[in-house]
Length: 147
Image 1 (spheres, rainbow, N blue to C red):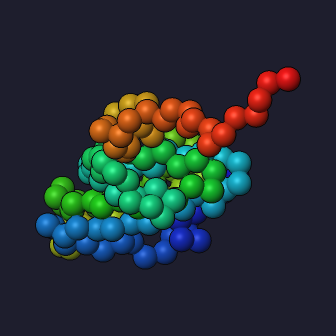
Image 2: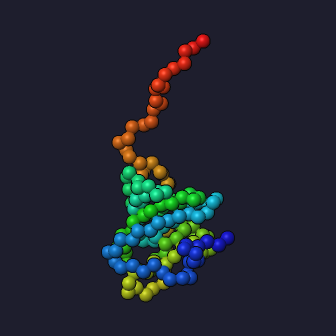
Image 3: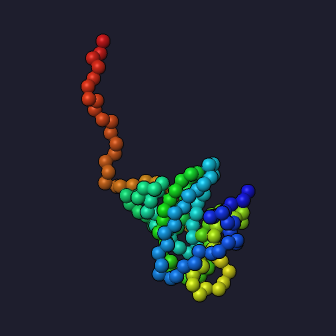
């Protein structure tokens, strides 16, 4: 199995070049029709701001995101941990098969690093509006008389 980000396997192609203090906006799309993927940027947190093209009511800052097959997630990342890092799949076999891209801060010259993120369960309800009332069945406009 081979994977890629922007049609390049991890270790090929140009890195994403950033400066300390910069905010990065990334639009993720899991183009697989059957596989789910958890993605992280080693040493950084990602703020989920939109899912499937819609702003989330309650943005959350997380160590990793979970992309279902065909799902899109937009994140903001504050570049506040200088170094050379890997943005990629949290499963080692996925990264070794190409699921990743190097993120390089200006002036850094070491090997790309990976740090496993915390293994927190994915919960879509985190992004919802906590003040919304729960759905209830609407009353019908009219009823049919019983026979």
